[in-house]
Structures are given as C-alpha cells and as structure tokens.
Image 1 (cartoon, rainbow, N blue to C red):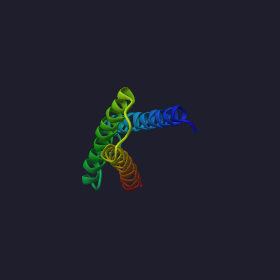
Image 2 (cartoon, rainbow, N blue to C red; image 1 turned 180 degrees about the horizontal axis):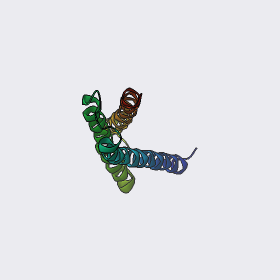
Image 3 (spheres, helix red, strand yellow; image 1 turned 90 degrees about the horizontal axis):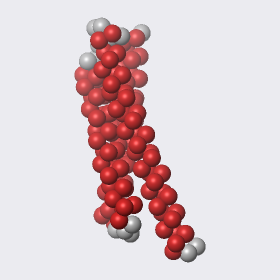
Image 4 (tube, helix red, strand yellow; image 1 turned 120 degrees about the vertical axis):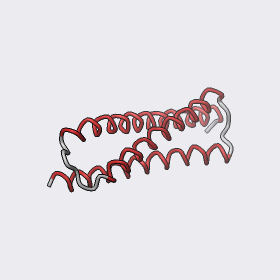
Length: 118
C-alpha cells in the first residue's frame, strides 16, 4: 500500500470517528431535552431522584467530550498532520469518556424508568 493510499485511509477513518461523535452529540443532547420534558409530565413523584442528576451529568459529559473530540479530529484533518503518541491518546481518551458516559446515561435511564414506571 502506498503512502497516498494509507493517508487517504487514515483520513477516512478520522472522518468516520468524527461522524460517530456527531451522532453521540445528537443523541446525548436530544436525550437531555426529552428527559427534561418528560420529568414533569411522566414522572410526577419519581423515586431515586438522584439518578436524574447522574443521568443528566452523564449525557452532558458525553456531549462535551464528543464536541471536544470532533474539534480535535477536525484539526487533524484540517492540518493533515501525522498523529503523534500524545495526540492519539487524547483522541482515544475523548472517545472512551464520551462513549462510556453515554452508555452509563442510557443504562441509568433504563433503571430509572423501570423503577418509576412499574
């Protein structure tokens, strides 16, 4: 594989990661909005109210982490620079934090819903 093909493949990979973060941002933000709208209508007297705060913080961290990662990858694509170790670790850190916070938020939302809707 030539350097040009490798560079194109790497750039395509970053574009896919960028799209992943874009979707995480959309899902996390919309979940925050929908949850806030449902809180007063669906859950009149919710149990385990602390979960609401944890869920909102998890989705907020996922959103902020995803936006930071998108800016990070956009800068790499814009400057067309090679990745160094510290840069790669920063991107991986953003990926894991955003993804884990999103999954934690979803799981806790399911637990909260099961507890309050049964």
